[in-house]
Length: 187
Picture: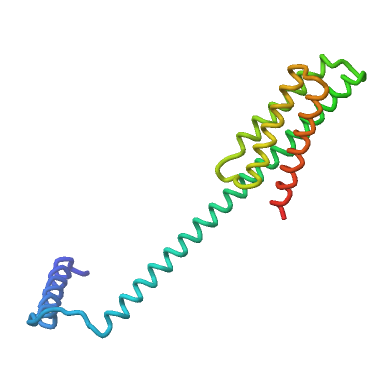
């Protein structure tokens, strides 16, 4: 049978001997002097640190630019999709109204849906024209918003045929330009 007390005592003796050996073998003297940089290697070290920092900054800037480009693309595609679908609905409702005015239906029944569709499209497109949607496309979408509202007002206020036709020509032109510019973003 093994005696636990003897094992503990033996372990303490071995541990003590190891501590003495570490003290003897370890560092027992302090050297005089001052630490100085190696002047020959210092410029290479500084250059290495600078290059590393620049590379990290470039990588970070590139990733930020990629995120910004993706957000811009998402905003453009979103407002262009809104423009395409809502303007198609508005044109359909205006055509129904025009057909009714020309004797193929009841203008009173089709008037408000045309006004609402034009204003709805204008509101939704205007909301989508954010700071990310700039330049010619932003201008064209804003022109659609103005033209759609003007045509809605023309219908709501029973404009003369001449004034109504002028507003319809303007809304058609604005729609065509905006959709063409939207299509060019997908190429």
